[in-house]
Image (cartoon, rainbow, N blue to C red; front, top):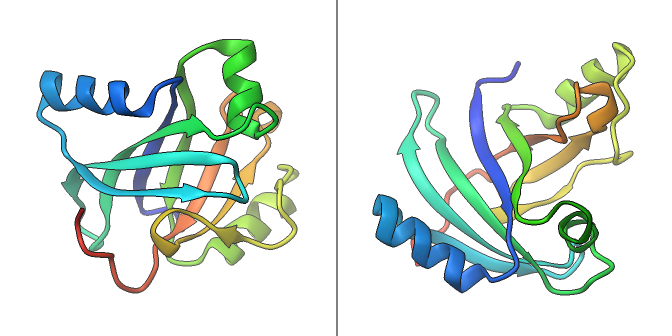
Length: 146
């Protein structure tokens, strides 16, 4: 069962410049940052608010570390902007199976490790009205802010 919007992923060419825009314009601060070598991105999670299910809602800023990454290819084709929406779920495996049973293509056979140790998978945008959709189960304990 999907419980919240976990984050909205925004692809950008310059992570530091984009972070500064969201800090100076809206007051958002970086909650967590990391490099995900498997996905070929450098990312920053900007916490927007807490949620009633104990999670939070974030903006995820994504800068590709290589041109052949999914985000790098997307940026080359589309330019900066909203890349995907992610819904939080207590059980990414069950919700991915449910989506698959309903005819939605799930992009990973098994969930992968995402930001902050979460478990993630993606649903094909052509099956979701043009929106790349991520399902996220947060890690059991949140990392320290930095």
